[in-house]
Amino acid sequence: MRKRSSIRDSQPPARGLRQTRRQFLRTSAVALGALQILPSRVFGTVENPGASHRFTVAHIGVGGMGMTHVQNMLRFEKEDKVRIAAVCDVDENRLEAAINNCAPGVTPYRDYRYILERKDIDAVIIATPDHWHAVQTVHACQTGKHVYVEKPASVTVREGQAMVDAARAANVSVQVGAQARTALGAWQTCRAIRNGIVGKVKKVTCWHYASPADDNPVPDSEPPEWLDWDLWLGPLPWRPYNKRYCPGTFRWIMESGGGQIRDRGAHQFSTILWCMNADHQTSFTVEATGTVPMKGLWDTAIDMRVIYQFKNPDWTLEWGQPGNKVGKLEFGNVFWGEHGHLVLEWEGGYKPANPEAINFQMPPGGQEVYRTAEYEDFNMNHKADWFKSIREGHHRPAVDIEIGHRVATLCNLGNLSMILGRKLVWDGKKQEVVGDAAANRMLSRPQRYPYVI
Image 1: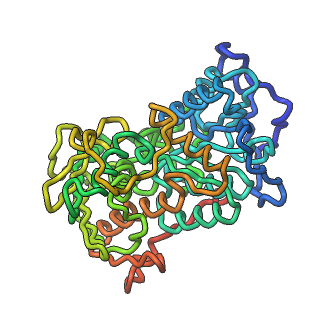
Image 2: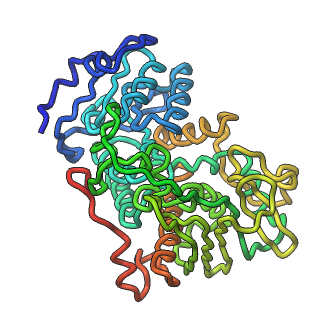
Image 3: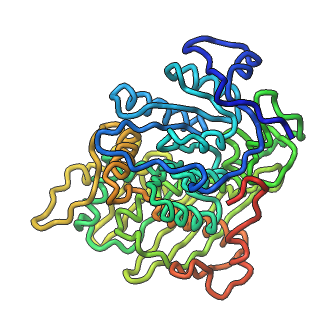
């Protein structure tokens, strides 16, 4: 075990100063000490900030979408709404890029547990690979920190339940990064669907391009010097490094990514449930078929069809990979109603709504739907909604962790039905598959110590 170094005495590199990796590590708080996650009564908790409070935030995971989050926080920082205190990543190149984009005084870490020790940090933004979301969220909640966590919320149903329980026990705000729920396009579509633009909707279909297959496998190798492979794996079983595992390719492995349905489906299903006013419909049946790769490390479905049936009210949700492409863009969904259909391409965030939804006129006595509209940029808007929930303390964010968990459950059970090759009946109240002991055993999985919930 490596000796824990002092993290409070170390200084981050000056802004804009390009350093060698050795210099960067020498001057950075990226120690690998074996920390023990302790409950909030040991570390202390952060009080709910008031309306004028400037949030102190830290980033856990700063590659890909994580850097978008950093850029958003830098904008909030210019508006004097936040202070970025720390950034964390197991990839030194990404960590260095993040610290060089931030103001002086931001501390870099390799291990997220050092961030959770800090009592001055109000909230964390988690953009690590999917298999880390639950563990880091639960640990952050246990130390009294508010959380913004990327979608999907979890990779197993039991992880998602633990995230909800931890958020409620700590009374903190946990927003899942399915940002379309606070975006203009999804909001326009939602208010149009809920107010009868196509009449009663009986079916919603999704189309999406296929997941890739690894047709040219490569052998295991030593990890690159800039990557802490053990920390990247975290709660996953230890295994040798392979180029096909990461960075972004973790999505094509079931235990770390879950394929297109768990990645993009988390966005689309969130928007669909919102439009259908169906967040409360937690029970359903699910039946999936698909084709999986025959070689290589990637094991998520290349093509896939999943049918979900809801009751009271009755409607069907269909995930198609590739499915029936009704629109022009790479993916989207269609609301099939008694008086026609309405298309929503992408999930209503990055792309505008269908013209019929944009031009929809609210009928007298119509039902309005919630939207925070502080920023035109929907990524900023989603975070503004999260900050609002923290400040006010009496309402949950647009994609509260319980909603995120229910969406992730759809994705996870779709994969589980395909793996088992049979239809599953899900009891949302009991959080179990009805009459299927084998399926219920697969709702959780062991985690590698000490990265456990």
